[in-house]
Amino acid sequence: MPTEIVIIAENVRLEGYLTDTPTARALADALPFEGQAHRWGDEIYFPVPQVVQDLDDTAAMKVDVGDLAYWPSGKAFCLFFGLTPTSVPGEIRPASAVNLVGKISGDPCCLGLIPEGATVRVERK
Image (cartoon, rainbow, N blue to C red; front, side, top):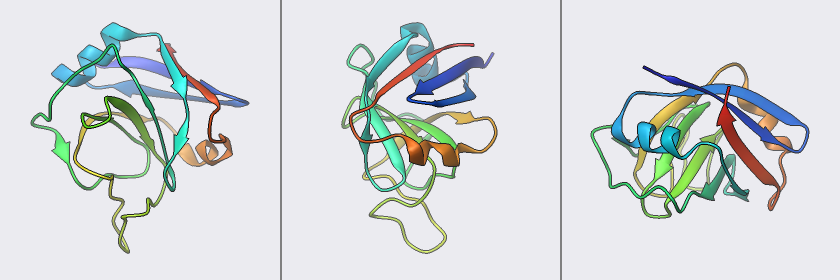
């Protein structure tokens, strides 16, 4: 069963959910968690050191706006809201493969307001 979450940073508050996959469940078990935002194009990511997962069946090299992912290489939670430096026209691409773990409900464009270094908190709704 999906886990409903809230993502909070600066003046931004978004709702979303974590799916029912092993990696998403590991993230749900770690809730609440927070970290300092790193920006990579229109992606925000931050380490979640208490969660260590390998690539799984959801692994992808292409994501969509609003996707939530776990990046095994960086042990990080990722929020995608637009193009990254490795994107090509019509495709949003992470730095390397990520496990898809959920989705932001509604319009994630306000993630662009979150500056580098801001604290991002993820908690149960």
